[in-house]
Structure formats: structure tokens, C-alpha cells
Image 1 (spheres, rainbow, N blue to C red):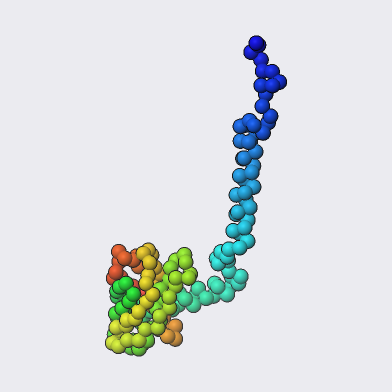
Image 2: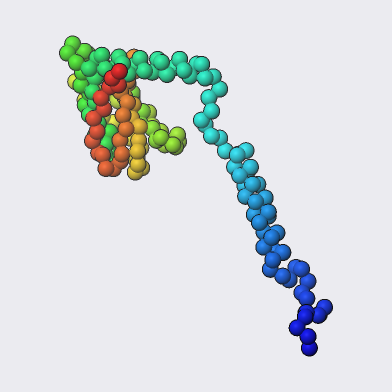
Length: 170
């Protein structure tokens, strides 16, 4: 018998490995592209702003509120527990603290976990109940009800159960 393959030794193309390997490369790219196209169409990125000019003006107003908090000498000591937050708000001399503050606890990447609390207090001490906060970094904003000033900070839970927020200083 000779060393050369005869016609009956040759397998059909669909019974060989190399054609299937070569077909799988573009097939994988098509499937992956289809999945990414589906995700791009059905999900909302939430990061695109339609009116850039108006957003820029809002940023200027937000910075002015932080500067106002610095002028008032405001500072806040926050304490987080499992489902409660307490705030001790301090101010400069001659500054009257409001009876109610608005506290926004926001997750940096998941908007559905954000919480806004309206806390009543006395002599600069405010407390209230929250929905349980997951482990990780949280952004905290404290402002008066009329939104004339604000304090902004962040906390890593549960490592930092207590945090001090100082005003923006230019």
C-alpha cells in the first residue's frame, strides 16, 4: 500500500477540524456584535446632556452655593449606622442654623439606590432613618430647604462610619 492518501481515506470537509475552527472565528464576532448591538439599543447610558449651556450655568450656581456654605463657616459631622444617619451641623459666629436640612445620599454609579431625606433637628443636630446602604463609596450632600448653601462629601461604608464634611473653599 502506498503512503499517499487514497480517495476513501479523505474525510468530507464537515468532518475535519480546521474548517470549523476557521468558521468559528467570524461566527463568534457576529454573535458578540449582535449582543453588543442589543445592549446598546436597549440600555440607557444616562450620561449624555442635551443642553450643555444650561448645565454649565447650573454648575456655576452649584459652586456659588458651596462658596456660600464656606462664607457661613458651615461644617457637618455625619455618623452612619445600619439604617440611620445623624448629623451635627456647626456654623460660624452669628449664623442661624435652619430647623430642617435636605440630605441626599447618592451612589456614584447606581441612581436607583439614591436617597433624599428631609431631616428636622434642633440646635444643629439632625437625624433620620435611611434605607439600608450597601458597602462602598457614597456621595453625601447636605443643604438647607431653600437650597441657598450646600456641603458635599463622600463616605466609604462600612469602613468610615463617621465623617466630617467641610465646605468648598476657593
